Length: 267
Image (cartoon, rainbow, N blue to C red):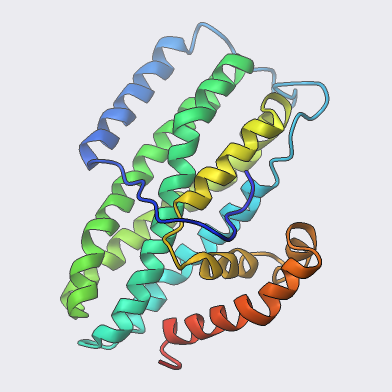
């Protein structure tokens, strides 16, 4: 799933309500119980699928790193806003909306296309798939709570209004800490043997559409910041030559200014 990059247009991908997420959790659990005896998982240590790789799913790790880092730092960013400082709260709220949209799009794309594909092409992995669905539903409760809490805090910057934001962020971060390593260990290897490159490319396009208009540089900066080496290898692979220079001389300075405002260092 290629990383979210530039040229994104406004997109909204929010689920309708927390009720839907609870219903999905129940359906997933029931589906697991109904099918558990029908098709056993492969023996421990045996790969669920064999054969050559059919796609490059390394972009999954890029997005996961970006989301983990962004949500892990989010409470600290909220705490850095002084009570009543609406200008600073607006900047932080913009960041929260950016990463919320990214996470919604990432998971809704998987829910819409990935799970059925794996069920059909690697049916022995159904327990892993059902667990992913349950984890998505559990995380969605916290993400919807965040979406509901941010506008009020954005408008007031009040300490009391920040608390629901902090609670929701903690819930999302904890859910992702459990979900992403599980998905990377048990789903990504399957993806790379049963999903085609054109199919995997769709997820990148879907993610780009979820990036709010005008936030492309900030999203790219967040992706690079999540890389172990700070993004040098990612830039060389995805933005070689002139494209990398555009980031260096235009995108990077803009992202640096945004980060300064985000952290309250400069406005």
